[in-house]
Length: 282
Image (cartoon, rainbow, N blue to C red; front, top):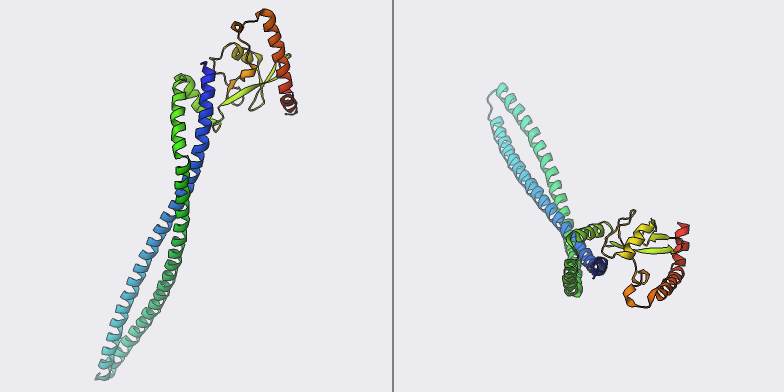
């Protein structure tokens, strides 16, 4: 088979592979997004749990500090009752006032920390509920992915093997060109040459509708082993089988050949009339 025929075979199989693979990729992308959301929620939950432990430790430390201040105040009260002179009495009384002020501050801080503990607990409860809901969404996404793989996995493997066999028939340089163009054009690597007017030698790329030189048409008419790209969209150009010149070896002589060429021109003009009108409007 000629190079362009092999490229067209590769293009057809590649298009099927991409279509099936896009379904799998879409399901996989959605599943991965849910997994990332769950991982983020899990990290946030861990951070909240760490904050809660720190707050609880802070509350405990304040309670210990408050208890120590209460004990100190009680001892000072005893000392105050047993003081023997006015100077000692005032000193103990001043210390008690300082300690009571410190104790009140400790109580205030402890109350604030307890409020933060309550708020963090509520946030953890809300977070846990969010994780449960997100897990349900993730499970649905996993089910869809598994179902997609079950539906298309076997067929995709067959097509990928078929694509590999088709690619082996294309020389390395042209195969790399095809792969690069296919990636750039989302799988639309090939474009048929549209015959706008064979009589006036007017041709266009069937993909981007930009004019194709007559020399390109002539080269592809005489040689199907050339990979020629459209100058505008870079797709690999080809002639539809109906638009390819008849093989002289098929018989019929010069007269039959001439008649075949005229019939082909009429058919091409009729077939491309609509495309030509569309091209003129662009």
